[in-house]
Length: 282
Length: 282
Picture 1 (cartoon, helix red, strand yellow):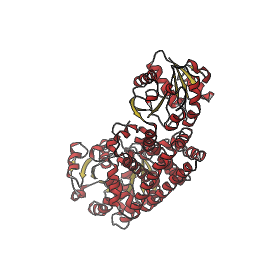
Picture 2 (cartoon, one colour):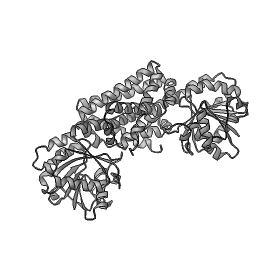
Picture 3 (cartoon, each protein chain N blue to C red):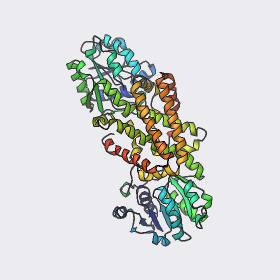
Picture 4 (cartoon, rainbow over the protein chains, first blue to last red):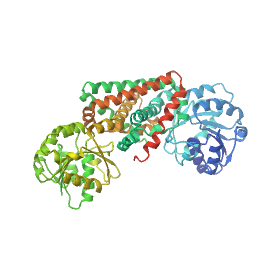
């Protein structure tokens, strides 16, 4: 099984590690804009060969793990170049724009729109880790548009990697993921910004920060190259989530201003219910 | 050494565990409004005896680990009841109001204003853990107002528990802690609220949430009984931080609305610098 990984960073590299472990016969071919990343991926053993898009005709599986704007650009070209029996899936955090881009492509049936809910705040080949996908949710959109045999091929991979499958339409995916993922990233980035701006001349202050701050601001370490295109693709949904988030913050501020600390208490008490919801999330 | 722990929850209970381990001769007396908490603390072995404020005359050390508004109320009474050689310290997340409350108390020299930057999102006696304070920052305010012998007694405890000491005035403490701690809690609570409100009828959606959401919303599990009084005490500073946070979020939203994704990228890139800052925080 020839697996082409387009983008040998955290996501693509972690797929490479687990697929090699799960499929004896798998050969991993790395494709990347960056020569340095390819060399690094080869020396780390993530990939077996450095390759390029012109060798795609020998691919059995192509995994696209690059920023979503780059995926939109490259996906039609990749579909043009592959064999009829090749499965192409991406791992992007938005799905609507991707699905509509290839809606009328001759090889639409070769593409599976995938979003594995897995990752860390790190990036690049050295960030790739084994078992990143084990026990994680994998959202698949418009599964019915993919050839049955190729759906099966995808499921075999996801199943051996230990993922839970959820099916969804692209619009619902993008709408809900804005709440449970994209908004978290913005809240974290802006928290980091607010504190850095205030404390830029007072380095000692960060001695005062504990694990609570570290946890809340962790996502502010994430890659801008990955996230700016996600916010672009999911603009409308993200604006809506941000408006609601800002309104909730403003209302909480008003309760504090009005010394209504009973209401402040109740707001927090109501939200404590997140404990139950979070059970089961790693 | 008779150590009275007023409030046998996460913070007080964890002090009890470590002090018993570090001082062979320590006897721990638990004082709490809740009989259930006292019984639980006793059966968990956090405390040696259930006690009450009327026995404070035999205390060598009193640790107050209850919500900050309750501390303001009880601290003068505790100081009235203790012996001249007894050290009283609290562990509250605000310091200005406490210091001003006892400013003119006859026994001001017996009090040390302490804020250990340690905790978890859990609460109650069963949340108490060993080594919670090891390697953590301990902020001490107005140290010069505490009797020299009692400063020494406090330092001996904090040193055996493995804490790093930082000295600060109460106003600076409250101002900076609003940024690096209190704001994180509000951002997390309001993130939880925004997502719960939106998704209340769609439970499956939380299957889409990954470790990023879990990390950012972790503090929303925190105790309202502890946090509402903190927001009350630190009202002015918290309103200021919230205004800056909301302004940053609104500006980020505007960049997205205006399709200025280069600026969106740069905002995130600038904030990535938090990586360096966070090094060393657990």
